Length: 73
Length: 476
Image (tube, rainbow over the protein chains, first blue to last red):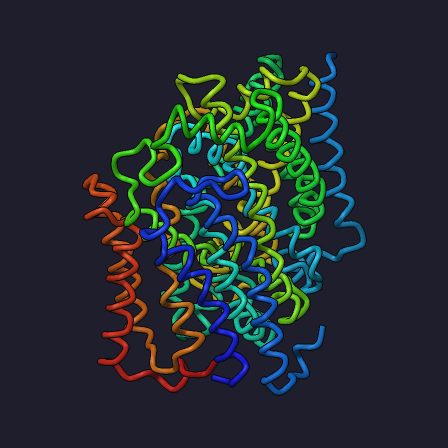
């Protein structure tokens, strides 16, 4: 696997850790954050953060993988 | 004619015309029919995929789950996000293989990768068995929404038959491009409806979302944490369901095939980055379900939660608007589902299974005939046997997610073999069917599809290591 893709897997793993494996730890109502009960806030926050994490993954791939002719838009 | 009827009829007719218009000057061949000539940019791919993801389930099911089950509904917000994250790595690789070898469908990929037409036919048949109940669900949901939104003025069968005819017309004239164009209308209407209602009803009845959630926390505290108001949907169920559906998401034949219609691997990658933003409206749908629970408790059918609260809070013309949005929201996925089911039957069952020498023109002509066959089959099932398909529908997600090991190992692991994939896939499907038929879903607190997937993945890897890959199979 190319270096950039390997690095990109790190930010991309976070939604899986937070939205699946951390669920037993965050299954609680209190405290309310921004008006949302804690469990819902946790899920919404990570869903909203995922595009940013993927953007980071994208940048890492661009930076460390050699450019592909066919990848040009 | 009252304004609600005018809005509903006007919207479905005009948006169908747009779908027909999309296909003007497009010479219809298999490439344009199934993958839009591989010319879709970031925006149209986003609209197309969002058009597939946001079905009537978004309106009715997610609000109904929030209403009747509470927190387990949150899994709907999670699994799409996981799927998009995975797609960032999987779909661009898949796209390149599709482009290089001219693949149109998911079974095409299996046939290409594992050199087995039999495996392609098997994958195609499972795909169709999973797609038809999903299509039936769209048609039934459409009838239900339009009937309630028109306050009974349009009967459900009339709404279903009218939209069925219109959908067939724009699919047959424009192929996948027609669906993508109608998806533009659908997405705008759906976002407006969900935005207005999702923020509106908590404001109208409680003075805001925060206050509504506080009231919910006081009256129904169990609703806000797993397992909500259910007995079986505790944390283990949510975790296994999120994983299984997250992995299975792009294994739906239509989601998988849509990836091929992008114009480049780069487009697909950029699309994966922005897709999770489209999950946020689901949060608003949950708010609608929660508000409905507080304002109109005790509905016998929780799927009516969304429409019941809209009916109570807004004037009738707005009900018409919601009905129109709901109808188009059913038509777009219906169009895509029927198009892919038809193409699987003609290209991967008929051509791959029975007549490898059939010409592309024959396959395309047969695909179009199959659109009518599949639609009529779904229509008959919807109108005459509405309750027979519930088990098939449960089977749908569990069934398609079993393709995951074959697809992903095929992309990234040279050692995986045809025998390994055959064994894993057949065993995974058998486990899922057995658990559902025996009423053991969830099994030990885990989603049955997840159990099948675990067995499937273990066998695919194990059997692959015990068998030698053929040289022809190893070619990426």
